[in-house]
Length: 238
Image (cartoon, rainbow, N blue to C red):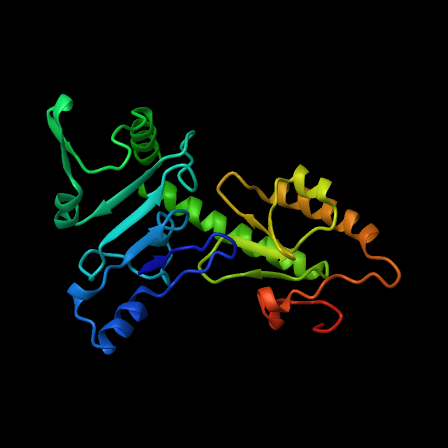
């Protein structure tokens, strides 16, 4: 079973304690389930958010993974997976020409990635990451509020810095801002490099373009099914 710490599109965070409690109440002993905690984006932000679920190997989880190139900002794709020794021993195999045991599928990895990850962790430190997390969450709320003020349907999951809103009708605008879209929605993942000035620039351009997309009888789409009625400001749910 996978515990998601920030789903890809909407940034939802599962409640780990509720997952474990539900499994136990259904009669599953700890040796009958395996929980992987996928913290690709939000895994390194969660320790700095008071209300976030606490992920710990004191709980009956099997593994945790985080990315180094997302929130941390390493210049190349990289990640870290931590698991229990019993699982490593099951997967490990002898590599004769290296005279060692290896537990990874690929066998070899980019040697620069751990150096960049180590450098970034040491340079920023606990207080640096705490400051970055606060900035991301604050700016995400700013973006969501500004979208609502402009009459644009938008949603921000609690504990997340991913703002979901109605998909722009202009594909050139989507490409220009490199927006990730799915169906009728798009999202902005607010990271430490995203400033209020950059958000204002994006918002001003979106509002200006949007005024040309919806004229006369052409109305913005209802995306209540994707983001909930409370977050949708279409003609039906205003």
